[in-house]
Amino acid sequence: MPGLPALLNWETALKHQKLALAIAAAVCAAPAMGQAQDEPSVAELWEIVQQQQAELESLRAELESTRNNTREIEIQSLEVSERLEAVAEVIDSPASRSGSSWADRTTVGAYGEMLYNGETSGSSTKELDIQRFVIFLNHQFNERLRFVSELEIEHSYIADDARAPGAVEMEQAYLQWDYANNHNVLGGMYLVPIGILNETHEPATFYGVERNRIESRIIPTTYRVNGFKFAGNLGNGFSYDLGIHEGLHFESGNGGELAIRDSRQSGARAEMDALGYTGRVLYTGTPGLELGLALHYQSDLTQDGSTRSNINRDGVIDVFGNPVSDISGLLTEAHISYQSGPWGLRALWAEWDIDDKIELVANNDLSNNGLGRSEQSGYYIEPSYRFSEKFGAFVRYEFTDERQSADINAAANSATKRTLLGFNYWLHPNAVFKFDYQFENDEANRDLDGFNLGVGWQF
Amino acid sequence: MRFSGVMLIAALLLSYSSTFASDDFIAPEIFLQSVFPQEEPETATVWLTGEKQEIATDILGHKPDSLRLRYWYAGDKKAWIVDEIGKTEPITIGVVIEGNAIADIQVLAFRESRGWEIKHDFFTRQFQGIGLNGRRQLDGVIDGISGATLSVRAMNNVSRLVLYLSQSLDS
Image (cartoon, rainbow over all chains, first blue to last red; front, side):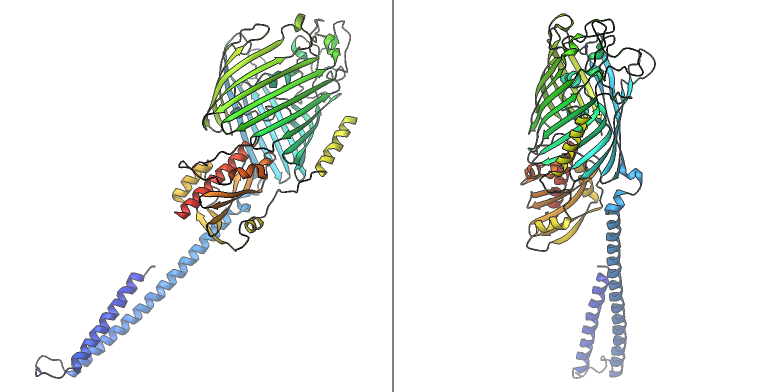
C-alpha cells in the first residue's frame, strides 16, 4: 500500500516524541538534588515542551495528510482496476468479437496436395503433379443461413494445349438454410451424400496417396451436382440426407464416355431430362463409429438420349447404330468407418445395377463399349494403426470391376485388385506427408506395382 | 417428378417427426444451476497474460480470443464457459473441473452445420474423469466423430485449457 512505510515512520517519530515528553516531565517532577548549576530552569523546560508540542502538531498534520493521500491512492487504484475490467468486458464481449461487417462473417479455407506416382496410375511415365489446389469461401448471413463454396484447380496448368491437363472446377456453391432445429435444406451445387470420401476428402483425413479406386470409379468422387438437398438429425445418433439433383449423362463417343466417372455433368449446363435422387442414412451414435447406407437412382442415364449442347455427336447408340434411351441405374453403397484409440478400420462396398440395355451400347464406331456394364461393383477394406499423434500406418485391399456382367471381348479381364501398404506422417494435424506402395494384381496382368508419395495441407 | 414429390414429403415428415428435444442452446445460467444446485457459487476471472497466455496459445494452437476467462467456484468444484472455433463458427463449451479432473462437459451452443454429434452424451461422457498428463495432453483416449474432426479438436483443446488453468489456480 503506497505511503505505508512513510506512515509507519511518522508513527514511530510520534512515539519517540511522547517518550521525550515523559522524560522531560519526570525530570521536572524529580526533587532538586543540589545540582542547581546543571538543571534547566522551569521557563526553559516550558519552552522545550512548547517546541515539542509544536513539532507534535506538525507531525500529526503530516500523518493526517499521508493517510488522506493513501486513501486517495487506494480509491484511484480501485477505479483503474474497475476501468480495466470494464475495458476487458467490452473487448471480450461476443458483440465485439463477432463483428458486424460482412468480412467478419466470411471465412476462407483451403486444401491441396502434390502427388508423385511411380508408374502406378496406368500411365507409362512417372508423374509429379499438383493434383489439386482448392479454395473454400464461406459466408454466414445469420445463425440459420449460410453460403458455402469450393473452387478447385486441378493439375495446375490450364491452356488450350494438349500438354496442359489442368481444369478449373466448381465443387460446391450452395445456400444452406436451417429451416427447423436440426434440419436444413440447401440449394446449389453440392457433394452427393454417398461413400466416405465424397464429402470429406481433405488429404489429412484419409490414408493413401491417391483416393481408393472404388471411390473413384464406382462412386465417381468427387461427385458434385446441382440440385436441392434436405438433411437433418433424427436422434439417437441417426441422421439423413435426401437429395434431388442432376444425374449422370451417358453418351456414345470415342472411348470411355460410358464410364461412370466420365459421365458426370459437374453442374455445367447439366441436362435435366432425368433427375438423380440420393437418399442416405448415417449412424454416428457411438464415438469413433460411422455406419452409412446410401441409394442413388436415376431413371435414364442417357438423359433421354440427348447430346450435350457443346459437343457435336449423337446421344447413345447401340451396335446397330440405333438410338438408345431409358437406361435406368441404381447405385447402392454401404460403409463402416471406425476409429477407437489407435486402431482404425474402413470398409466400403458399392454396386451399380444398370438396365440391361446398356449391354448393346456402342461407341461412335459401333464397337460394343457397353458390354458388361450393367453390373459394376467394388469394395475395399482398410485397417490402420495410429502409433502416435504424428504417425499412422495402413494396409488396404481393393477390388473393382466396371464391366462385371460379362467376361468376353472388351469386358474380359476387367476386374482390378490391388493391395497397398503405407503410412501418413502428420507434420501438423492439418499437414501430412504420405507414402504407399501398391501391389497391382489384376486380371489383365497390368504391371502397376510401385510407390506413391504425397504432401497435403488443409486449413 | 413424382419421385421428387415423394422425397419432398418424406423430408418434411422427417423434419417434423424428430422425437428428441431441441438442444441447440443451453443458457449459461441453466448450466451453472445444474453444476451448483445447492449453493450460489463465487465468481472470479483469470487474466490470460504472460506465461498463461503462452501456454494457452500452445494448447489452443492460436492466441486466446479473450483477455480473461471467468469461472465459478464452490468448494473443490470449478465451472468454466469457453468459446472456441470448430471449423468456422464458435462452439460454446461448459466444463466442470473437480480436483484435477473433468467432472462434466457440455456443449452450450453449437453453430456449425456439421459435427452435431459432439453435443450428445454418447460423446461427452468420454471426458468424465479425464485429467492432464505431464505434457498438458489429456490423459485418456477420446474417440472422435467421423466428419467432425475440428469440432472434436475444439472440445479437446478447451478441456486441456481449463484443466491447466484450474491447476494453476490451485497451485
